[in-house]
Length: 237
Image (cartoon, rainbow, N blue to C red; front, side):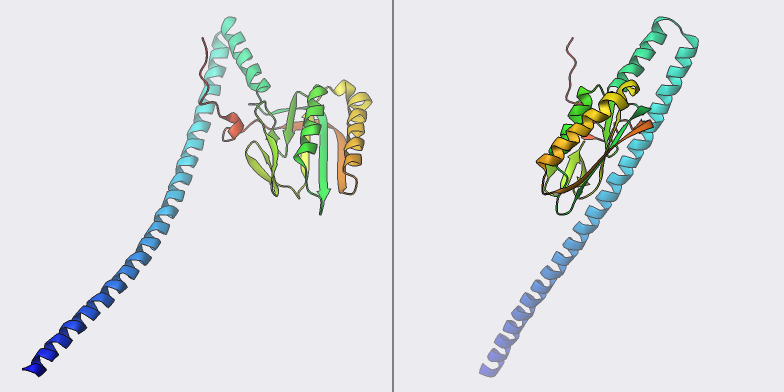
């Protein structure tokens, strides 16, 4: 009787132990499954967002094409006030940096040689000087300069319109300015600015080249840039 009782107790203990081990194993398997499932869900979400972004870009391009077609049709059939409205709208878009433009101008190439790194203050100084010289359009590394454009440094990067650039790379400032004063006034003035900057950066190795070009192309501000956002603005009547 005692032997049978002990045998029963042993069997019960063994079953409990096996149950605990099995539960722990299932818990571990569930964690792995959840981790794999979570990773897969994240990957699927990224793919879904990419597809949605592509669809939005495609729809936006279609809408822009439709607007241009409509404007062309209206301008071809209407005259007077409507034509002036369309012309003014286009001028505002050009002024706001929403259109790609080209004309005679300048290209300033800046390189900070290691261990020196590009300084946001240097970029801002040239951009501000160009504005004071009457530049009507400016871009930095292909990013259109508009009223809300930020130029700032963050660790190893320069951020322009929310886009990050390596501070160890080359930077190119393009500007459309008055062609009649480029050679006689604007370039000599900017060369003096360059001399002052290099003097302040004594001990660092920099290359700053200023070149006059007959055709300078400056891109429009892209709609996915932070500087393009205006969803918080409410017109005041």
